[in-house]
Image 1 (cartoon, rainbow, N blue to C red):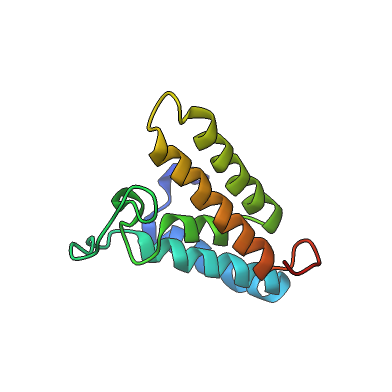
Image 2: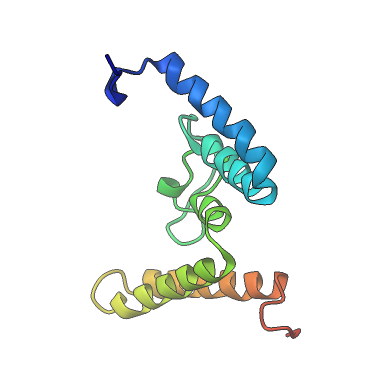
Length: 133
């Protein structure tokens, strides 16, 4: 009788995972290393107690995005390609500028500015435009 997918034990799933990791590390070296880096960042953010002594504010360091050792924005940057991350930053800036009159006023304008500053820094650090500011 053939075993069904749902009949696999946790140990069997772990074994498949270990085999896949070895295979991937030999065939897709650089892509595999980047995926492992992202995986470590995400793991570092999960199930860690919040640092209750840290000071938070809604624009620069909101508590709901700081649940582990890594800020959510850093995990997102590590996960996305350069082009995707630039689009993410531009989209968030636009979102806050779009809604500022109807939701959080100056706080939303400050958030839009925060995303734009992060975009400028990212583009400078990665020489996206091929020029210095």
